[in-house]
Length: 255
Image (cartoon, rainbow, N blue to C red; front, side):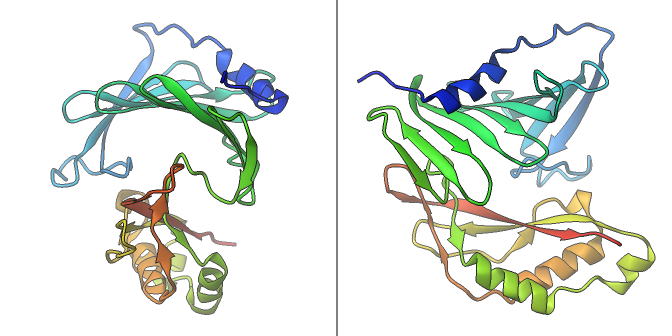
């Protein structure tokens, strides 16, 4: 059965058809070392080195980031710029498997996180997802064409946890470190927890240590370790549980 795309998905897909700017030798290029979570690391950190990002600045508002693994295979390409009308900044993201085959295409609004994505398997579309915020995912599978609504994205499986219980712990326990406040330190700490297919989880860790101060990272870890609620393993669109990382952002912002 041919894959049917409803009008809302078609409307968003049109934004992906814009042609990319042509590169020139005069454009600025930066190279960054990344960890397995795609966050920058220090040049001296050889243990965490998993990917290399090459960022080319095209104009003041547009750039392209290409990420390679240590075997120099492309794994992700992101084009940053404004949408066709120039109303908001957006990302055009393509991800690839280790065999170089396309896995997904995504158009993401950087202001609110809304996105439209198409997912592939061996070159064939498996389905599309339209995310409209508040855990509202509109799913359309390629085989049936049926549109359903879910609270998670089955094509990007991630573990699930009790968000209300987590929010209560945050409200009750999270505080701004005095030393960080005095130094004017702020930022978002990303905590990663690895959960295997059986629901067993590792101790939480900070996956973006080079982007936040040590005191903020320590406070975020302290609070996360108070969470004793259940974390269920990630489930694919086929209903299989898989190993996956759960990422929890904790934002520290001064008044």
